[in-house]
Length: 75
Image: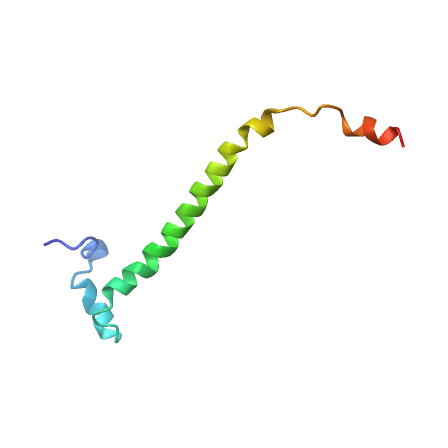
């Protein structure tokens, strides 16, 4: 089976072999999750922001009933 990115830049070998050499053997899943989980959290935050932006469209399109400067002059 072809491992994605293993032969990039003229480098060959086992991607998990580098983890074993550094003392992190059999922790490939944790390595992947440390990259995927923060990315997923950022994507979820962006999606929530877009949803709130879309929900506020009606409010942003409304105009004020009376300008604020007129309200302040009466005092």
